[in-house]
Image (tube, rainbow, N blue to C red; front, side, top):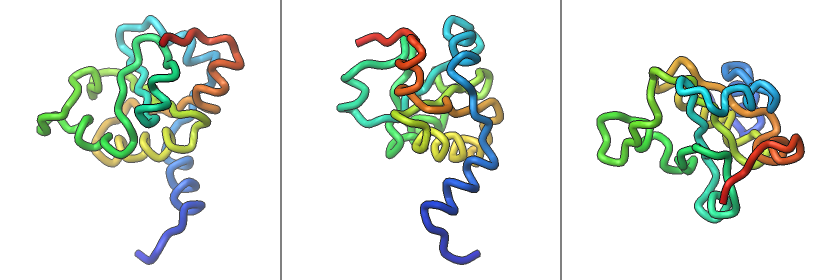
Length: 126
């Protein structure tokens, strides 16, 4: 298969993962069939997040998303549309690709991440 660099990995992930605009994501905010998933690190999470989001730092995502692991968070469900986000959209795109590889089918990445969300006036909780 050969070696891949970051640029190639991002291109592959972007080709496989649907992006969702802030305006579309805002429409899912109170939808019980959708779940926002914050893949940022602990310090970033502490600085504010989308209301109702669950925290699954990128480095722990596979364990948190795997129903067979003790770290599994049941809010990350194959029955819901999962809207992943990070600060700007890169990590969440890679994370969404990981979930697709794990068999999740309803996964998207917030285009522009929490930065775009805040710029658009999306609600943020501490």
